[in-house]
Length: 30
Image (tube, rainbow, N blue to C red; front, top):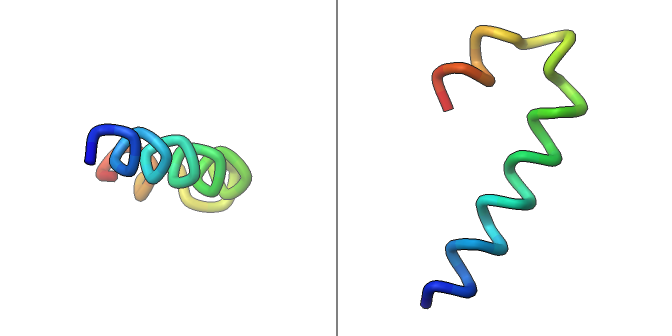
């Protein structure tokens, strides 16, 4: 379970890093 959460967090971080320029506010919220 911990591995799954960690994997999801890493994936989400990567996704938001790409859209950090487009949606900086959303990155902070999430």
